[in-house]
Image 1 (tube, rainbow, N blue to C red):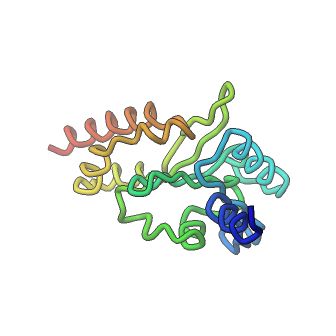
Image 2 (image 1 turned 180 degrees about the vertical axis):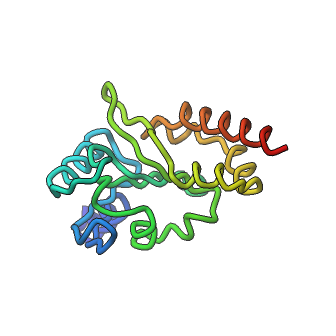
Length: 166
């Protein structure tokens, strides 16, 4: 394989940048469609950074439904907003086809624990965005990060909020 072709493949599957974000400045590797081993590496990077961020023992991630691509990086290295800008996924706040969240390893798999964006949309009544978001079949992401159960719980929370607001 030529060096040029190998470089292009590496570019396609692994991105890295210096993040100057909320958590300070850090070299951040972003893995695309990551393996468990790669996500463990991202967690190790996060832990080595020595920050006192509550969720440092996991990964932050985006799942882009349109391209069927998952992007994951060490949770305390860079925010979703800063990483979105670096990897050029577009406007994460207004696009219901971009799932963003936090995941931790559990019994050899990474499991979604939270999404500040989805919780915020539910709390603030963004019905149009949420209705579109919840019609998307996110099960393809489970190959990388287990998200289906979390999305199911979030949908139940949304339905409860919708009934309260009726």
